[in-house]
Structure formats: structure tokens, C-alpha cells
Image (cartoon, rainbow, N blue to C red; front, side, top):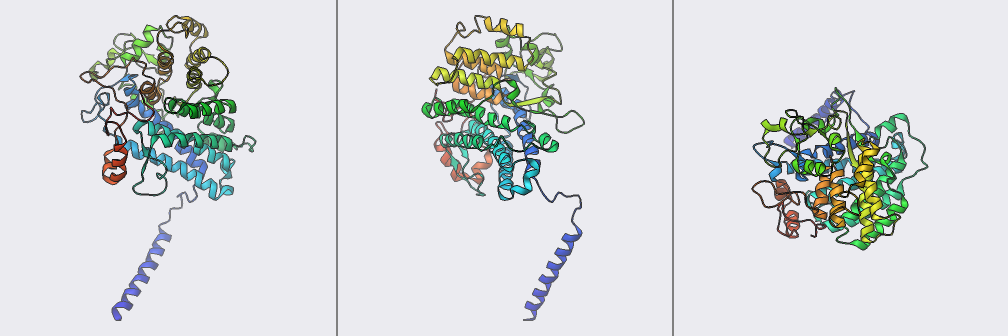
Length: 475
């Protein structure tokens, strides 16, 4: 009995001591109330920063850039993927932050009005969540989705097919959810929106434009569903010019929030496949995309997969403006919308215009975004190798090649589109006879979520390899 009493007294003392310590150890400068607005501001930065960092993998995989071996003699150009655990974890961290925005605005909307209409904040988070989830499933194929945010330690992997259909539903709902007549935001709230500076109409167009990306990518698998989504999104309002583009601008020094491309300016070169394609077409975007080689003053592309760091000065590098610390990262643009519509018309969608019109609009939009002179744009579009009526190849090859050129600095999208449309240009790295068509799953999933991992791998033709194909990649 005595021992029990002493034990109880010890517990009470410990509890009291802890309470006192907690009171004394409170940080008066610590943030005690997190707003959805602050989370949106940070998460938008994190998403854009991560997207820009794709120069280390996706901009290599699409062969826009060439880069020497980077870590422990690993070479991403040869599909030696050494960061899958980090990429997987970081992706879900951003999605959890977006989910927290939705929770805050749902459970206590009045407290979140500092960031504007709580319903609009929910819609914005849903749009960004769909944007991120699509990129993730396009990297790997099947991924944790429906149970990813449910707090389960071993969530199951949803099929990419089911994810794609749910993304269309999510984007349709988010677009419809946006209140265009909401009260205007305060100056602070506008600047916290790093994409549209508080213009909610831009977010609605972003949702509908993203619907086009999702729908066209699944077109070879489920055209009736894709066609209906494209026609509805177009009628509801998509990007109409470059002013509608979804893009994020970084800050100049001494800020830590600098353009991720700035960090790779001196460690990568424009790859030969991209530079050769641009030069073959006398593309006026060459000096906009690239800076001439330091040693020669020429616009020469570096060999892909066999670049020595000592030879970087012999090849063209990223243009100074694009690599500026306060540069921009594009999440989705009008040029891509135009190419999606051109393809949709070729497949039978009922929307205004012709495939040729939208194809030419896509090229023009890209060149205007990069500051090409209007006369040079007209000359380019009139070239027999560029004009839709005379350019060589099938419609998939015509649209695919020009879309690949326009998706410069959106390397993952260029890689996804090459996998889907099979328009040539890319070549296997030296010594290999294949080009990667997906990421492999991270090692940690084989340890922490093995049953779900094994089930997902069993659905992959060829298993968990870089040469296996995801659901929408049918050819």
C-alpha cells in the first residue's frame, strides 16, 4: 500500500512539474494560430519549387537538358534514381498541407476569412491537390490516393484509372465551388496567393485548363469520358491567353525563396536532342531558351548521357533570364491548353475551331510568352516544316513535337507527353536500348507498406521497373 501511495504521489509531482515546465518553456514568438492563408502561401511556393527542381530528373528524362553525374557517381540520365524516397515523401507532405487548408476552412470558416472566402480557399487547395496528384500518378502509376490522407500507416494503392476518373470529378467540383462574387481580398491576402494574386476567376480557369490536361492524357484509354470532360471544361472557361497562365514568381537575393533553375545554371547544358530540333526548324526561341556556349559562343547542344563536367563550357546553357533568381516557374499555360484542344479536335471533340488553328495558337502562345518578335513568329508558322498542313508526320507527331518544344522548363510534362504520343526525337542514352517510361517506387514502400506495394507491382506490366508502362501509356 505504501508503495502505491508513493507511486501516486510521484505521478502527481511529475504531472505538476511538467505543467510548470510547459508554462515556463512557452515561446512568446511562436505562432499559436495557423491560417489557411499562410499554408496556401507556403505550399504554393513548395509546389513550384519542387516542380522547378525537376531539372535534375524530368528535364533530363525528356532530354531538354544534359547533366554530368551528380551524386555518388549516379547519373539520372541513365535512370539511376537515387532520390525516390525523398521525392515520394515530399510530394505527400505538400498534399497534407493542402488537406490542412481544406480542414481549417471547413471546421472554422469564420476564423479563416482573413484569407478571403473560405469556400474559395477550399477550392484552390483542391485544384492544387489535383495538380500534384496527377503529377505523382504519372511518375509511378498506381499510388496511395483514397487512403493517403486517412492517417493509415499502410494505405492501399489506388489504380491510376480510378485516380484519373476521380481527378476529373474533383476538378469539376472545385471549379463549380468557386465564388466569383466573393468580396475582394485584402492586399496581404492577395499577395499570399502566389499564383493569381487573389483573382479567383484565374483559379476557375486553372481548374478547367487542368481538366483538359487530365482528360487528354487518358484519351487513349477512355475517350468518351475524356471527350465529355473536355467539352464541358471548354464551355465553362479555360485559359484564353498568356495572362491566364498559372505561374509562380520567386524572389531575388537575399531571399531564400529563389528560382530553383538558378541553382542549376552552371551545372547543366541544353541537350543535343532539344537544340538540334530547334535549329532544324530555325526556331526563334533558341536565344530565349539558351545562352551560347561560353567557350565558343555557339548554340551547341550537349550529348545526352555522356557529358563531362569539364566540357560544360563547350555547350549552350540555360538563358540568363530563365535562370534568374527571381525567375518564374509555370504550372500550366495557355500554349498547352491550345495543344490539348488541337488534339481533342483530331479525336472528335465538339469545340470551336480546327486542329490547325489551335496548333498554331499553341506555338504562337509559347513564343509570345518567351518574348519572340511577332514577325519572327509569323515566319516560323509559315515554314513548311511547321505549318500544320505541310509539316511531316501524323497529327500525333506534329502536335507532340511542338508541344514538347513548348514545354521547355516543364520537363515532366514534356516527358509524359513523349511517353503518350510517341513522336520520336528522343534516343536511349549511350549503352542502353530503352528510354524510361516511369519512376520506380521508393525503397521505403517495400519495407513500410509491403502488402500494398506488392499488390500495385502485380498490376504493372513488367513489374516495378523504369521500362514498365502506366495505365494511360498504351502504345
